[in-house]
Length: 155
Image (cartoon, rainbow, N blue to C red; front, top):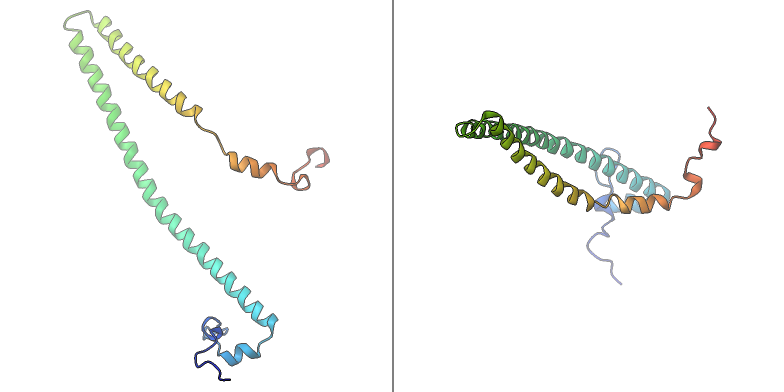
């Protein structure tokens, strides 16, 4: 029976402390404990690197989100100013045909209707929010031993 000409694949993933790959003979001569230590070390390193990558991505995306939020805020303020000056223009236009006080009241009533419609829509949307059902379900399954018991806590 002949041995395969290609390596067993063990020499491709294992590395020495300096970072050079282990040869197949070095892997064969290592104990299971040492191989497990190397795998654990490699997994730990991989996890640290993945966490650092995630942190870097979060920082980068956070900066973009902050910039977008600032621009949305500026657009909202601009929209508010447009609504304010259009309201003043409507008030001034209506005051040409009626008393200025009645014109102001009409503009205020228009804004009250708009606010009521927006409130109604917001309330309907808020009622559809179900909360964190899955999180609540999983927290409920935590054993009582892990939950804090205030009566047993002394300070």
